[in-house]
Image 1 (cartoon, rainbow, N blue to C red):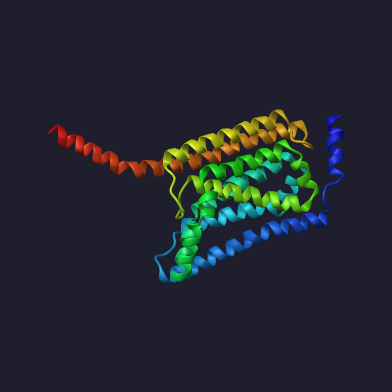
Image 2 (spheres, rainbow, N blue to C red):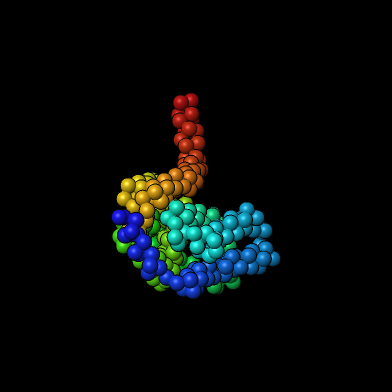
Length: 276
């Protein structure tokens, strides 16, 4: 009976032309970002120290993953199959943002711009707006909270019926994922620095929220999703999410360790001096 119920929803699925249009609307910004980054590297290398090749590789990998998840065979499979949808979600919302944050685009951008323009961008980065959205709590609510709304309400079904929702939700998944990664690990200059402890606590809570949601999906298939697909998709979200999170945790801990190391060394030296 449940199966019949699901099929009813798919009668209203958007037509092929709308879907292809949505694919290109979603992919175009990433194609532009890829071209912009590569152009900035060429311009920047003329006057500055050579931009690290590994950052270029990370940016290419990140934008290609994002493009693959919104355009082409994976995007088409994701439209009808929840397991593929979840694979695309991991690419677009977690892996692509992680790679792109690690590519330090803002540092490259500021280096490429003329000084007066770079100062203007820095002013925008220090604005209340930027400070608000890059706070780990706000970024986590937008990211994990957004996913809870998507998978526990009718929104998931509606996303497959209305082309505008399909586009907005995919952009949101990417942007919220990017903001989340950016707020946890500082690669680019940040408008305001949050302590390692604060970020670590929010990260642990956000990961718990992501883990609980994947288990919830496993037990309670989103509307219009078959049970077997929800179980496989939930597991993919759980373990795939963990794999990406391990990288974020590793980088956060590494930075934390490096930041505290001189202090520990100083304390040790002091203790040694006092004991003499």
